[in-house]
Image 1 (cartoon, rainbow, N blue to C red):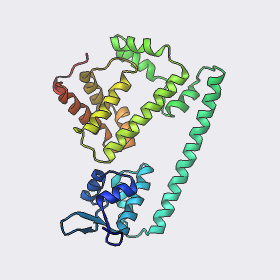
Image 2 (image 1 turned 135 degrees about the horizontal axis):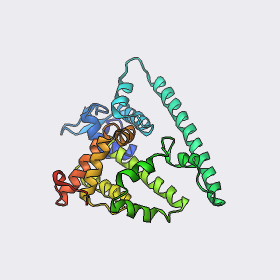
Image 3 (image 1 turned 45 degrees about the vertical axis):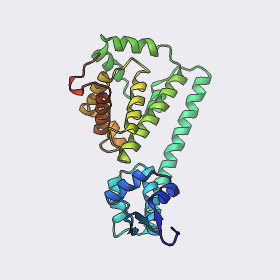
Image 4 (image 1 turned 90 degrees about the horizontal axis):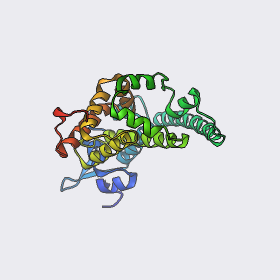
Length: 264
């Protein structure tokens, strides 16, 4: 099929760098519908369709949820020039934030070089400004008498500052991938979701051994505790419930009944 006739969904997927499944999902929800069909009822995208998809990708990269992107793109009072201006404004805000993060990392590297202990300010730079110095005390009160707490203490006491930076980076990467999966409409019971659940369980195992049954209970705690649910849902609306569903689906696939999950 030539360019003038339009592009198939496979060609568009390759052109813009997203999966065919994602384009199908965007078509179904009306975010990026294909404007045409072939005689055999295959989707066909014209130049305007592809331009819309490129705008979606920019907004999604900036962290906007799909519902908000759809509202922006379908606003009759906003033209393409206004879209570009808004995207430029958001990109500059993100660049500024990233530059601040680079400066924070540079200061942390300097501290590591001279083996300077982390101050509360340092921890805020690594773990975010929402870090609360009371959280470790709360965790000890809640779980201090469990084997998992003892295991966690043993594993973390020998961790260096570089180890903590690595753990933080891996956690951020996992959370970003979880959010991307939810954003793309990935089925919580799919193999892709199962792979993310396995990574999630492995991240917990950095501190203590975590069974699938325990992971189910942790996922439920994320939903029930506003501090956890707000963190996940700030990455992608509905992510907390999606993660819980994915964890439970993975547990069932391995013979664990989520309704009978126990801590152990």
